[in-house]
Length: 104
Image (cartoon, rainbow, N blue to C red; front, top):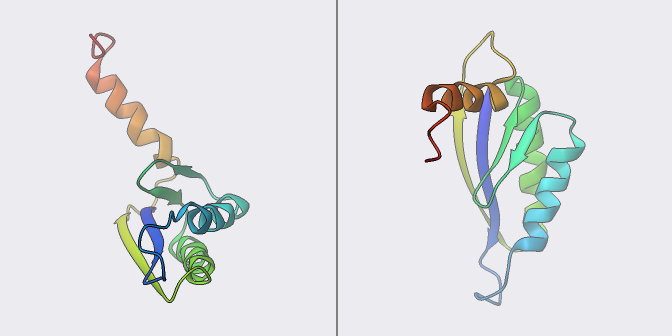
């Protein structure tokens, strides 16, 4: 399965504060998990089996919780039993479908 998630603290004393330290704590947990993952400006996507993916997301959420009294968590999952390598496989298929002249 692939799960894209975004986790951030909320409800702190400074509404203009950056959340990069909290997000960095979450991403460090994801990267240390050893599961295939990718982080972009909006989400971190992680690939693995149900139990291992959600364990990592739980630990990342707990880490973010240390930065504020509330945590916002957004999840989107692609559950496709029997498939692996989809973190890059889906993108590879998209690029092939676009063809070599897609950037023009």
